[in-house]
Image 1 (spheres, protein in one colour):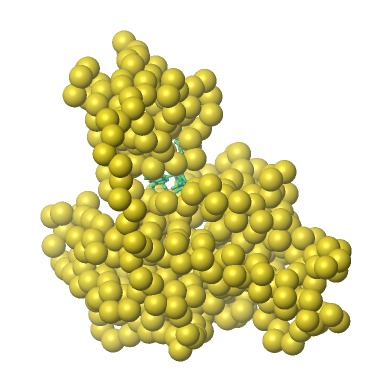
Image 2 (spheres, rainbow, N blue to C red):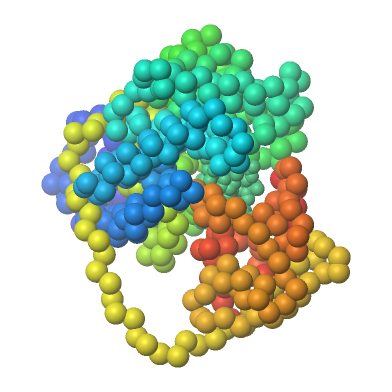
Amino acid sequence: MDTTLHLSCLLRLLLAVTVSQTFLICDDLDSFEESWSEITEVDSTLVERLGQRLLPWMDRLSPEQLNPSIYVGLRLSSLQAGAKEAHYLHSLKLSYQQSLLSNDNSDSEAKPSMGQLALYLLALRANCEFVGGRKGGRLVSQLKRFLEDEKGAIGHNHQGHPHTSYYQYGLGILALCVHQKRVHDSVVGKLLYAVEYEQHLQQDHFPVDTLAMAGLAFSCLELSNLNPNQRNRITVALGRVQEKILKAQTPEGHFGNVYSTPLALQLLMASLRPTVELGTACLKAKAALLASLQHKAFQNPLMISQLLPILNQKSYVDLISPDCQAPRVLLEPATETPSQTQVPELIHVTLKVSSIFPSYRHSVSVPVGSSLEDVLKKAQEHSRFRYGTQASLSGPYLTSVMGKKAGEREFWQLLRAPDTPLLQGIADYRPRDGEAIELRLVGW
Ligand code: B12
């Protein structure tokens, strides 16, 4: 088949899908369908394997491990988990309602954050439910209050920062929007300002994930017309977000990095203004993602949950009116390949901490395939090294090292020495033999 035709057909299909047009605009229909099905076929096996990785997480029903993002990702995908799925939503409802609606403030640390409440509301919408009733109303009020508090923290002159992040601020607005709940113009205004005057706010630059989340919130507001007074600003900001994300495309095709590409694609594919440039960039990103999938880059359930929707041409904006009747393939648990019982080969990893005095440096040996978390555990057992973590939707988050807790707007950054920040957390990153890992306390 002529490759030029092949590509241009794919491109045009992508544009057609992007603007949700049902008619096909390719002259050579046969070759077009052939080439598209070739791609979706590859996708469907890969997609199924991704979905299978979520299944074990759906058996973890303790409040600490429940993850509304997993439910959202699955419902916006081409896959379903049968009875497990309904049971998971039920557990989410019990857990979130109990902790959010109880008046007991003694254990405030266990309460879901603004972003987690927002994800829970997205999960309800993914099941075609609108928050309603007295309990639902209280959840909506809580999310609105969270946003108002954050608006206060940003301040009149925009000199402050949200207590959480602009990512969670965008997520909060998006969740209320898909439930057709209006937030005050001034709340939307803070996010608009942040995108309009990003450099001026000395935020260096927003990471692509944050831009994409803000963009998804703006897209929802634009489509739902919930803040008509801000309509022009929203439209301009969306154009700006789109432009910045396109500029952040790497030579391999990712927007930002491999893990921000799913959300970036969600935003770009929800765009109401497709252009040829956009179509080409999306195709390139999709190809880069498929290559990363072959290299097993997506193991983390949160990352998989952000990726699955785009492999089904969906985005969080589709939660405005989700299609709960769409046929989805039932996931079967993956068949396990028996592991060979061999004495595991050992690797040596050096652990460094220079943000404390006296600094720390120690070499640890662990079995090949161990995670960075295994390295930290081993170092803690065999040396003066100490660390602490906190559960999050992305897995264990490193909160303290050698008794030093990261303060407000600080974090313990993970780096491959000398200076390469890791793209995965302690539970997912698997160091290679001879690698040196540094834990560095930095501001953000
Ligand atoms: C904001 C943010 C941060 C902030 C978090 C502080 C804050 N108060 O918000 C800062 C800048 C500190 C940060 C740090 C890191 N981050 Co970050 N972060 C995000 C972002 C943009 C949003 C997270 C969020 O609010 N989610 C919504 C809420 C509701 O979920 P949550 O679980 O309650 O949120 C908490 C956790 O996400 C946690 N957190 C943030 N990042 C990470 C990363 C990991 C691996 C873990 C376990 C937890 C964690 O902080 C959130 C607030 O408490 C995501 C983007 C995304 N696509 O998800 C990236 C993202 C999750 N981070 C990522 C990474 C790699 C990191 C670091 C490991 C980078 C590094 N080299 O050190 C560190 C974490 C190191 C550690 N100490 O364990 C990757 C994870 C990829 C993956 N394979 O899983 C993402 C997807 C960004 C990306 N595209 O690369 N991050």
